[in-house]
Image (tube, rainbow, N blue to C red; front, side, top):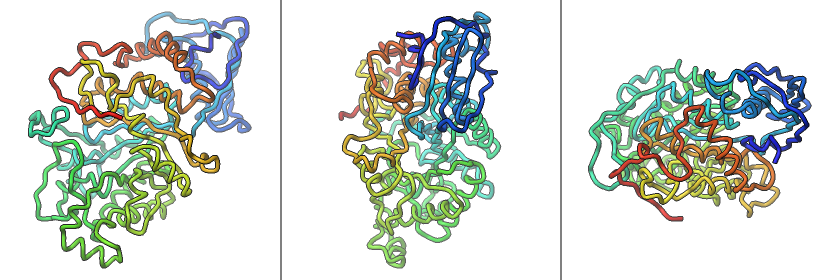
Length: 496
């Protein structure tokens, strides 16, 4: 094995040369990188000789990845703010590298449990360390509204706060009795976007409609099917039956919401949700049935697709693209087809979407939901969802074998998901995400066959010490620390 075999994710090409170079620990921070537009986007080339380091990159993103690679070669001490030795020896050689996929993402759900701004900034730093380039920020849901919208102050004044939370996952009425809330101001979000941009990361915001809207309805009941109901921000997990009504005034309301989103976030792609939308409220409501007939729909269930189409058209008119969960393929209405489909319920929808000409981000819950349990260890905290180990994530292949060659270019990449119903602190988020997110980073970056045993060696011997230096409270490979357990808190495991 060469000295470059400590890197993660694994580079495309690394050729060691004889000799070593002594560098200061902060050399990666000040490394000059020549931008060479003849190189592919996000690619870089490092040449390390006893005389120094020469770096070239195809763009600013590639320059950042060159610096991250050099930082890894310097060693774990380069990931500390201070302390340790002042210099380190780096092996000489040449590294040429570029990512396999353009979309290397991670979703962070800040709606279920709010993460303060400084924690989001830290999470972005950890994504950058792993050469991930998309943060999908899930900003709204039944349990909380997290984005300031000037002109609609009740969205955060009311919708950002709930009285309690469900403890674990169960079917009973028990709640923790602890109020929870928080939101980001416009200035907070601009800071998050700028912090991400400096690290080569695009922040893709999501406003989930027309379901998962209980927090918005608590703030503005007139947006709902039953405007006379006085709803509170939901304290349960799961799927809430409440949905938006189909009045033109509600469409205008959310157009205004998205206009604020577009003003804050420069991302070409904007999330509009579209997942888990129960139709029972529309079907049982005379006004909704009449509205569907007025619109020429086959029934009130098609209001789902109709509403999404209005939001997608609004984004398109402003030069952006809509991202929706895979239910949008079957939503009815006039069969709006947003530009990007996030295939989360499995891979079949992604295959269908790509075959129909849509771009796809693969994020199937069976493989890359990092809130799902990491083992059958008896002390695994709040064991929900499918069992997915570090090894399982590393073996995931984002391009389904059954996808025809002609459609494969439609797979933009993949995205890991960190939903936070059961992750109520930064420590819990880091436990769930790492080291599986490191395995995912290699899946979406690296080319060629993957050797999981070799990856686990690199992870254990080289990368976990880097996470230790960063202070990441990851899950140990052999099971949780005692303080990472949650005795007595119920989960809901599922089988594949």
